Length: 600
Image 1: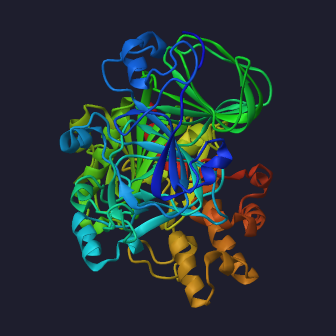
Image 2: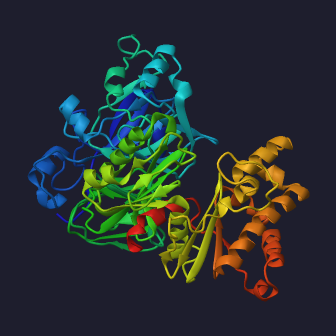
Image 3: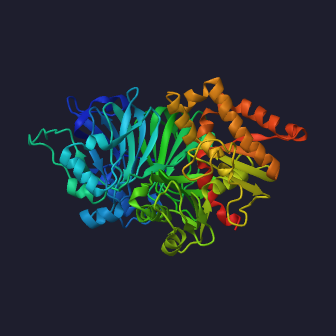
C-alpha cells in the first residue's frame, strides 16, 4: 500500500479534561470532560481503526500484525507508538513513568513510557512541573510524610510552540490551560505521586496514589535532559531523536516531497491547512505514511512527523564537565552537543554517588549511540597521567579520587582527564572563538579564574600540568587574602566570588549592579586587564578568549577592558591585541573534554 492510512480518533473522558479539543477538529461529546483524543493507538485501553480505503474498519493491531510491508519492520512485537492530543482543563496529577526495563519487571508490560509534548496552547506565563530538587529516596519519603512534595518540584516556563521531551523516571505534570500533542511509547502505565485529593466521579473515592511503585523508578537527583533542535532544511526541524522515536516539525509553505523512508511515519497537522497526495487536511488530521513510499505535501501549515528511529551507527564522543555544583554528561558529534544529562554534584555526598550518576548517564546514551571515547573536564589540581583528582577546593574531601579507572572499566572505552580550564580552552581553540587562530589563550572568569593555552591545536600543559593558570598570579601583593591561593591573586580580585563579596560589602544586589558603578567597574577592569597583559607579555598569544559567568555582564566593561589591556602592553603590541568573547560559552568545557583524544 502506498497511500496514506487515516485512522478514526478515540476520545477519552478524564477528570481533568474539558471541551477545548473541539477547536482542533475533533468531535467531542457534549458535556463530556474530554481530556485526551488518541489518534494513533494500538493498546488494550484504546484501539484505532482504519477510517477509509479498502481496509476500512480494520484495527491498527490487525493492520500491524498482518501487513508488515506497510510498516517496513518486523511486526511480531506490539505496535511501538501512541499519539494523543491532551486538553488539560485542570492540573493533571504529578506522575512518573517506568522505562522499558522497569515496565517489564514490575508490570509485565512490553514498553515503558518515554514521551514528549508539543505545546499547542497555554496561558501566558504558564509553567509545567518537570523534575524535583530531592537528593535521595529518604528525602522523598520525608516530603511525602510531611506533605511537602509540591514544594520540592521544579517548575519550567513554557510557551506555545515549545517542545519538551520527558524521559521515563522524570517527575512531571501538565498544568491547567495547556493543550499539547503527545507522542510516546505505546504504554498507558502511570504512577501518581500527588493528585490534589481529587475523587473518582464514578466511585466517589479519592483517586489512589502509586507511591510504592513510583519510589522504585524515580532518579535521585533529578537528571535534566537537554537536546538542541536541529535544522535539517530551511523548513524541516528535528525536535528529538531517541531510540524509540523521532519527531520533526515541518513548516509547509510550498510543495515538498516526503522522500522514501525504510520505516513508516505518522503525520499530524497542528496548524493551517495542507494537501497530502491531493487530499485536503486541516488541524487534527493524522495519517500513517507507509514505508518505502513517496508522498507529495503542499499548502500553508505546520505538521509534525514522527515514527520509529533508525539505529545510530556513526561514532560519538562523551564529554563530562564535573563542577562543584553541577555535573554535565553530553553526547558530542563533531563539535555539537547532541544530548545532555545534567544533575547536581552534591560534593558532601562524596565521589561515589557522582561517579554512579555519571555511569548511569553514559549507560543511557550507550543504548542509543555508538560511543568512541570519554573525556572528563574536572577542577584542579589533578594528575592527568594517573587520572586522579588531587584536592580540588570546590570538591572538599575529594582527595586522590580516581575518575578514569571506574569509567574505563565500566564501558571498555578510552577515558581522558583534563583540568576544566584547559578543556574549555581546547573547546574554544578547536571549535569556538579561536578556531581560526594558531595560538589561543583562554581565560574563564567565573566562580574562580582559570586559564589554558592551546598552540597549533595542542594543549600546552607544562611540566606539571599547571601551565596557563592565571588565577593564582599576583596582581597586588598587599591585596586580599584567599583561602587557597596567593594573597592579592587575580582570582582574589576579579573572580565572580570576589565580585560577589565586593557587591555584598557595597550593598549591591548583584555583580551586574556592582559593575554599573564607574569606580567599581574601573577597579575590576584594571585588575583583569593586568592579568591579561601579563599573559600577553609571557606567551604572546594570537588571540585571548574570555569566557565564564562574569562575561554575562560584558556589555558593561568590554570596551574599557580592551582599552586598558592596550595601555598595559608594549606600544608595539597595542594594535595587535585581539581579545574575544567565548563563543561556546557554557558548553566549552564539555565540548573540549570530548575532544581530548585529539590532543593525546
